[in-house]
Length: 380
Image (cartoon, rainbow, N blue to C red; front, side, top):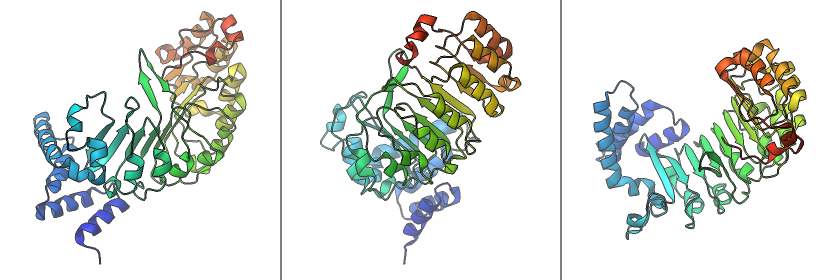
């Protein structure tokens, strides 16, 4: 028979968003003299929007005190990996050298980032397979892989994960994708994440048709793919009925120097399942003026708030096709930078969209003939 503690923890794993169970668990821990009960109550109190700034500062200070004293215990077998060893290694990590950042929410480990800058060997994947402390983990960012994904597929504790990012973007003058070593078994890992809401795939992630066809993606709202070398995957994505709640779709082709082709874009536009899309980004696409006609005739402009067509082959003719559609004015943003519009085409669109248009830094006809947009730096 389960103890009350085990029963409460099982209830939280079953329904992580149930605040009543979080409060009950906190009360139980406090009755047992466990300081984590107070920590949970403090973090729950910080979620109250009615709290004054002064109250929040006091609560946050107390949360920091409790973390300073007890977080090694609360991350369990992950303590040395995430926080440094007790013998003093953590004292010598500068902010840039620190391999990880972590965050707690409602008293549980909520967010882990593995930074790309630090070359220290990572045992994170192996350890997480034995870490029930990650049962309510909501966000995992792996800027470096080092076999972590391959190990994580064996973890029984990731059912609450909502955000998964593989690869990274770094900032110099702007943000852009950083290439990393190809990852394996991404589809196998994602198949084990029934609550996943955001999937961000940067770098040379190993993509498969199975990944885009998974039936467990019913909660996915945001999908970013930056290295789309094989655009046939878009047909699998468009045909997946599980993606009916997807609102943000960001597609970019970069390392392969191949454009996101019109056939793939057409599959997205004509999909009977992607009816919740409000944000669509197609970077480095050869959809061109013909693709503008496809966009208009698909009816997707009735739903979109943001359409990002940077780095492409659209000319003034495509601008006219878009501008002639009454639904274009529904957009909150149309970004058409680094295409091949003249000032005439930009003015046509600006008369419809006003400040909702971004159209600077167009290609010349010579650059378009050389498909220069495939080699431009692609800033997010």
